[in-house]
Length: 95
Image: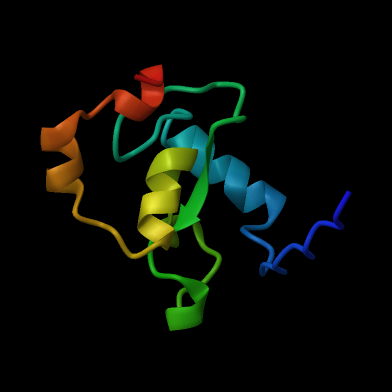
């Protein structure tokens, strides 16, 4: 079996206490699609202004996004209107 390629190293996200404040403020709900996940397994804190663009690790620079919405934001594909017209809950219900 072939060896897996090494995982890309990522900068650590928000400090744990800031992350928890963001999730509590947003009621553990994705701010893009509305997915609610009180366990915190699918919804996580995201930087509004990325640290690579000068953003900081503050509550004001954070928002809660689900994994799907976060991957769209990270990939630079932020045409949310197109996604909403297509099927706003497709990733929630795995259609």
